[in-house]
Length: 590
Image 1: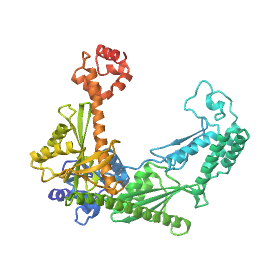
Image 2: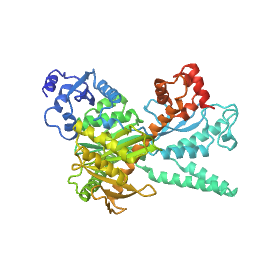
Image 3: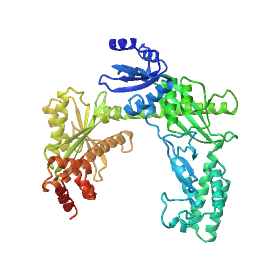
């Protein structure tokens, strides 16, 4: 802490971006500030709580970059977060871009679903959306392409394609196009995408009648389904304002150091969709909100105006950076929309917290139930083992760990056995010894329970090793048996060797099944990797000029014999001399 105090003395009262580092020199948080001195002092005054307190406890030192303006500080923050991906900047890391329906008029009319990393007002594009439901966007484009003969292909072929012959393209590559017909198509489609469904609905009804008259009932049924879908979409798109302006409405709800954000997308006066997000507040409510919105609108369309619940620190930076028009309504319909967004943010937060709470209770409950059933007081850590081999070759084992009922993937371990043997007893002995001998040497916290995939053989092998390490009184051992269908069937007590009766539909039985499936998945995945590399190795052994180094390079590049066979001789020559590559290519293609 003395080092931090010394560093704080020299921090200037200037705008900039700061980077918090842990004792390994890893950047764990990146922020921005109008006044670096005030902001950095605020972290170490002893009054921080929640996620901020946890983050501060990990800080060993910090660095900062002074900028000329707040806008520059904001851009620096975004670039550093993108580069370092700090653990406490989760809020800026995991948002996806939403798709839009894009209409392209020149040189030929075309409809497609597009995603853009950045959409600006100055971009002269016909974009409609965004559509958080990507399926809806794709389905609408597919329907419009079916109803109207837009250009379907990306290239310009030498002759007309199948779409022309079935009437879904005008043959732009070969034919002279009636410009009046193009204008009418464009007007119909743009009108529909702006919210007027009448033209498309009438066109679908017309095609349904034609298909029915021609006894093409299958096509008529498909079109009827599309008509129903359009009606459902139209009903969901509530008309909230009659001025047909594109706008977003942002509402927030703050509780327990978390900020719930709801963004309503209003396009052409209709409420299309909404976006929800809960972020942990690490800096301040205003700063983290401005950072989140800054990243959000870097990746999404900026509408004509954005309605806000109130002003906040950093709003002017966003306005200058992205040319955003923020409005804080005080009354009327717009004020009601902001209140609706804030209420949605609150409802979403309460729902998510309830789901998390229920999940925590359920997980902790079955974990405690298992501990009580096995006589383990305060059961916390469970480690599970599974073995895999191919007729006694490529023998491996996997270990997964669960802490308080939840997978702890950082603690998962892979073991490549020293001998290839079809002997579960000795394989289990080797793996258990390696795991817990090193745990003792490294003074790791030991597990409370070991679950082995199997029955008496695996249990006895495990207990023999634990006994040799004087751990048999400290760690409980049980087995998870499977039936002939390879499904979890019973829990075997390692002390009494009796099967413990557990109801098949209970949460505890499902929990045990999930753990057994997880260790099996982890082990089999590793076994496939080892087996693939091993098969390549054995296949390459008798080819002159391929030693350990070149073999490893081939394995790293291709991964399997099949992919190696698919490679061209030029690709093989990137790793091997010409003659060796030719020999390998010839063998692969015999």
